[in-house]
Length: 126
Image (tube, rainbow, N blue to C red; front, side):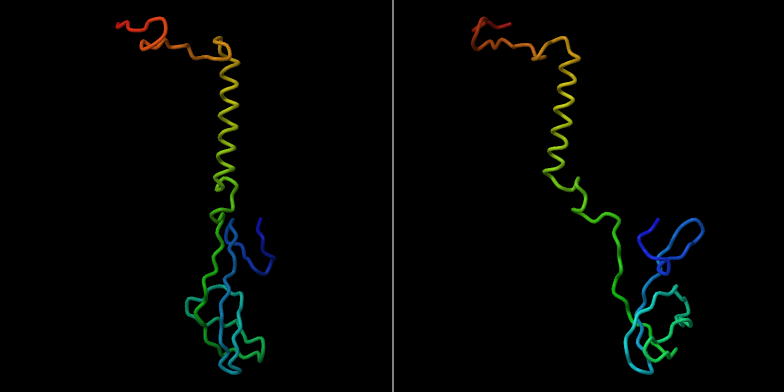
């Protein structure tokens, strides 16, 4: 159902949410660390402690954006013009073949138009 191992997600109703990663600065040892934890509206993050000194005194830092796109541009074969053109051309050719087979007009379903500027009716005006 998801691409993440067990500790990185939690179930909410029938859906699945991914745990956000937050960056912290330890007030005791002054080292940066990150932690996977649910959002705390009060900003306390009581369950988070420094992995270096186990201190609970910390400052939450501004995170960079963690965004996962469902289908980034140019990752689908249909984003490639040559693929689409070939795919559409093949479909159009198949439709044309099927129409010619179903038609009683033979290989060329278009009737010849006698141009009045040349041919059998040159110079005639209707």
